[in-house]
Length: 332
Ligand code: AQP
Image (cartoon, rainbow, N blue to C red; front, side, top):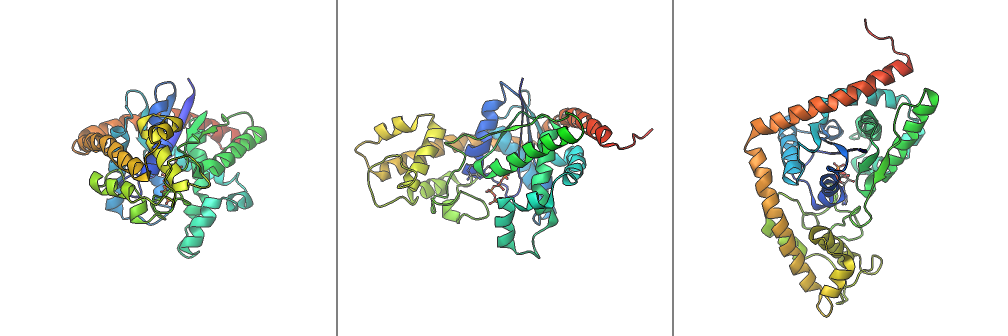
């Protein structure tokens, strides 16, 4: 069975709708036909300053949301990145194989560091894509389900896998990004030229899954569209309406064509109201399931403990092979 690997940061407690539709929904869909490994990437979270108690809490909340969204620990391996020390270990090796210039070309780093200023930007934020390379290669992943913003990092991962395989000997599977066109870039509800993002979106543009559903419903109803009235799909001319149609389609399972036909003769308000209802119907049981895991910390710890054990079995083998191939003396 193909191997799947992906991760999500525990930085803000609640995931947002972009995280869910761009990544987590795919994770759930891929867990049956594949050997899937999913993790809460707390090592990545500390590339920006975190409050320790909050980070611990957010890591639990993130794992609970993944289970609430439908990951089943019987059908996939769910773990916390820092529970598997091989990530940091292979990360160092990959740092030493990555060119400073090629890492400097990562647009996500350029954008984020420009916003933060160089004194507040950590070296960790700079090498974050390199740690991500280690995350993926440790598991010999074939497929990495992510949103569009990760495409460039996946290209770098492929380059580094090939570089290692050529410089030493074939060791790593060269992974492919699994990016679904329709949900790869969910847009800010108030600024449909920008992606929905926890750090850049305004409160009204960002739909957090754990917020009061009534507040989220209001955000859909006041989403920015355009001055037209006809509900049709046109990413250039109607980015706001098209974004709402893509979200509806991903939540309802109906195609965009079916939705356009369904809304024929009705105005944007009808789409917004229906989407608000659809989201509420989905998010209410999601929140209840998430809460049951949060209310049972012993069960959550058990799931994450088992996951880390399964992950380490694979990760430690890969790391041992890598250490041998690069010429580290084995301890006796
Ligand atoms: N708007 C989005 N549309 C589709 N997919 C998205 N992802 C993030 N935003 C969107 C995908 O979610 C997964 C987890 O991402 P992460 O843990 O790296 O979260 P993030 O990138 O920190 O989320 P933000 O909101 O994008 O954070 P900031 O604002 O800090 O940059 C990934 O697969 C990502 O592609």
